[in-house]
Image (tube, rainbow, N blue to C red; front, side, top):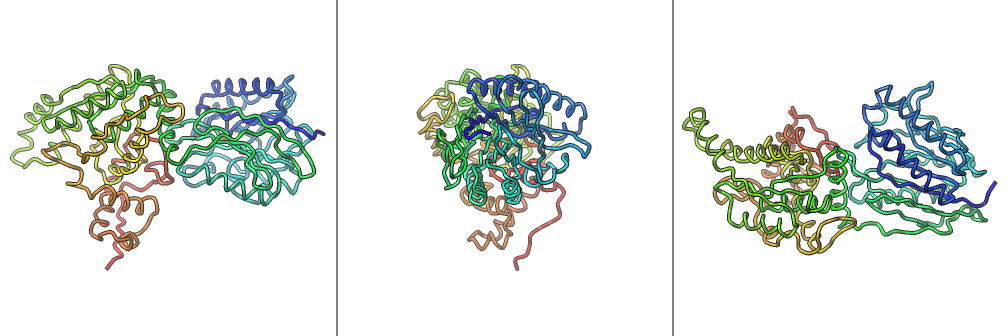
Length: 555
């Protein structure tokens, strides 16, 4: 028995599928915990496989390798004095489980299985795992410890059962992705569990980008009395060591450090930068390239790329045609200069004109329309992909959620690219973040301070510049109106009648619904990007491409 515990939480950035790399991270954390004289080390959910490994879990050899890595790490605990709580996949006679292995002195002393398997939003764990029954606490260093796993704490009966069975403290490993206000949602959830069960709860989350998910870390602990006793870094790795003592009021923390959470203004920028950085690096790229048009979207993506990789690893290209304005040429160069990136100009005039000439017999006497405009966009895509192939840089695409919502993007043209940092960001949020970034250098970002996005880019009317004097509002309603309608339609799943009741024109709302529906095929082929909201296209909102439903309940 002991009345003191030193607990280490390893808030790390594992890579899905990289069992050897994740094992190396875990071994370093175990060494750090031993050096800190920690009694317990907690790793995040499914650490050795990374969260979430998807259909890799259907490969028996992958599961075998993960279990062997777990056994290897268990053996490493011998002589360290550290009790390891290792979240991992585990196969037994009942099937495959999302579990934790508890190890001490080189031996497994317990396994515990996740009870509540999430099967909504971005989670579909029931596809792979068998749920465990309600679990018992584990005695570690003479202390009864409850280990609910992530989703388990969203269901009060799991923690209640653990405490009723004697748990004095709860340690919860998580793979909880970021979206707007998620950090505060988690904290309110843990406050509720602690208030109900009257024992401390330590919440460990992983950090890093994994395809379209971004994990923000921000691990924390709350003890009875609604006391936040420590808070880890947001959007960065951390190694959090806290000391606990058992007294008349149960276990309390004696030395926790509270790091301020990122603000709601800063968090989306950091999420995009972290998601971009990890997607590029974890897929083996070192540099990125993008088309810099002189518009707001490409300017913001360029700034995010510089913050993620440094100016020396960002290549921007202006691809003018006859409709490209002098302002766009000037603004693009100004933005590139402020960011310090390589800036090239590659004219698409001759290849576009040659394509139009060759197509003239096929097009016949039909009047010019979107077909001719899209040749420009697709030629830009061809050039940018050629540079990507030749120089080995990942091509970034720059379409925002407003445009993708209504299909205001050219498939196989400006949609070309490996990753889109703005995929889940409405146009007005892009403007807001541009102004915010001009006033701040957030987190561990590598870009310069000051006004990196020229005011002229922020102030001017957005335009694809595919025909003379074109602006986006020739085809779309003003972005504040469009964003409000799409927010109601996509994020809130409101009916046309409900959206019209908010004060929007009925014909416009019906038009936007039609555009949203018919653009699904484009979105299905779009590059991945960081999920910032619950209803991100693709990962958070899955609609059929062939869709006969029309909301026509008005009148």
